[in-house]
Length: 229
Length: 318
Image (cartoon, rainbow over all chains, first blue to last red; front, side):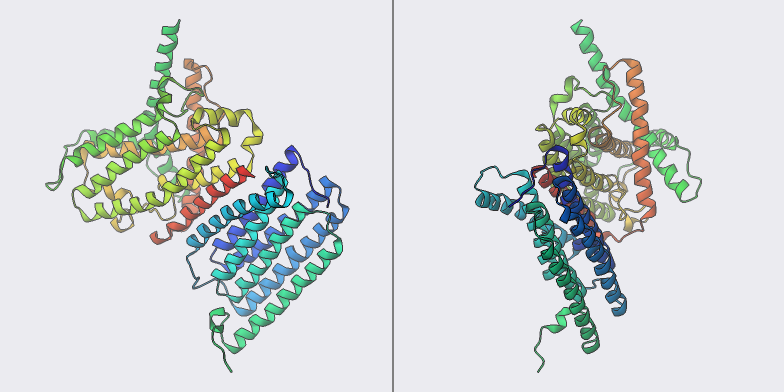
């Protein structure tokens, strides 16, 4: 398995990019406005594309440059565009009745990051067998687990169907971030499959939102807690 | 030789305290004027706070009948506490002076909290309804801001394995890699939000003098004359101290006097004033451009700064 072993400046840049991704995830978690969530998602995808290109350059993985371009195109432009379209068609603008206040959810997210860091240390030890885990392993595992946990948190705490969709996309972005840092030599084909899956998710959930709106008159997923025969 | 050196150091230390004491009203005047200028008003002259102090100190002292001894000692304790803190932090010189090992950053925070505590007591003391309101609101903000402050201090300690502000200052000047590390930048962001809370620049703070919008100010409604002057002066000094910690320890650690000669101290004072002006302009911009929020949104910026502080600590561990 090819792994990264960056030194000095490169590692600082990795650290910085991972922090940017985490911060943007928190923008999604804390903001009231769904449009902000989508913009933050787009920004996060751009940062991920940057990371991909950076690892491609510094670690000599030409495939990662292609992946960077694809990420920029799909996650950075097409998916946000589709999401904004869903939003505009459904005349949504903000989450009106979140399960907990945004301040509380941000603090919960911070606890998730702590949990992710603790888990990353243990996991890294268990996987590699070295007792001080390498910095790359720490950055990769912590950011992966943190973003995935926050994505789950978004799934649990949000009630709008579009927000659920964003939660799924954030989880996927987190896994992509982790895979970029931890195993940058993944085949290009896999990335193609994932990108088309993402497109499929957005299209399917877009139809779901429209259905919700037509049948129930709102896009609140709470309306789905009863069986209707 | 040694005698001269110590004498010199004591002189420098006195200068540090005097700089904060004498220039804090100027900073306040600058902020008020800037705020008016941004709103296209004319604004009071920049030296108005000095005239206000002069006026207040020449007035008769009135004391409410319901007040106890707390009413008298609170302003004095607050003023003294705030006056102690410039001994501990790099205001003009970038090396520790004789009394700066009395306390570290945590000690400084504790002394400032003591001042806040006594003003809060004074707000409750005369059993005026608005005083109680101000005290309880300020205490609420304090309760939420304090954990973040502690985490920020932990982050600063992790940066350089020391809690002395002078060490942080030297480290940031010497090593740009630490300065630009995400751990440090996130700490700066977290501390900046705390700064807006503590110096009343959050969008929930209001300039209009309606009791219902007041937060910290409402604690002082019963005061008049010299005691009010002391309280106002100490709150301006507290602001100046927090600005100084923000610029000289965390963000702009350059331009402090290295040897402590008189021209060096004067130069450092000038540079300090321009740094204050920079932070003040930034805060006034945020203050004026952001629309007012209702008071009950206060948890959000504080939660954000807590998050940033936690991320800073994690980023440092990575």
